[in-house]
Image (cartoon, rainbow, N blue to C red):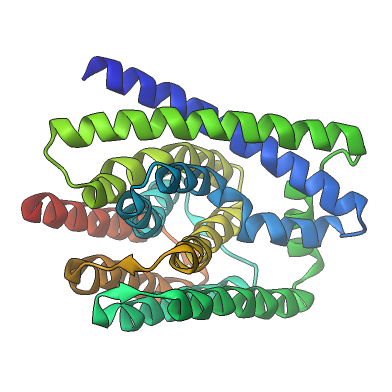
Length: 315
């Protein structure tokens, strides 16, 4: 058990370093190829924070445990909304100014509902996966167009988060190093998670849903707390929503294109409704004063703890 926790901690450290290195490399190359810092920031908001989860899921697929990858993809969305956002708001109230985040939240509710409907027959097939990928690109196009209405202050804040050196060789080295770090990080996290899952008598699906999803969210939660204290609420919420949409569409949809996924009945009864419920609870918080207070952060965190208790009771 102690060895598993040690390998897991090392894996999380490598995933965090790999994710940060990949963000700098992707941002630097995007800006070198003509994308503005603001647009690069939007790209990072939508995709980059999901890279650790993606690395773990690819590793799980390569080892023939797609159930673990599916659990991680869906579980990460719940953890992002409840744990990450709840902790960040508890540490510092989040004052949101970016107009594109409310539509992104609606898109998250929509893709969660779409996944639940597609899974009513107990499987996510290739056509379903293609629909999820189309939903992702439609969401990104919507966000891209909506971004043009942002104030100069918001544009500058998002651009600031994406500033990176644009030297070609440096960013190529960054991406190569990121692949190395993410690959080994995913290897150690998955190794530790499988050992813990066996010790706790968890199925591969529950292993991905609970220990893997929570563990891979911890570095992101720590970064969100730091960003919240710095007043970067737009980036905190943008990363949470963008990562959740990416997990439910690109990761699940991509896996379904490779091979059909069996979707357990519990996902339609509990996990996906939990993701939808957390997103729906969040909507009036943003729709009103565009502020997530400490009290509202506590509500999100309590909702996450309630979901976790239900999962543990039913496992």
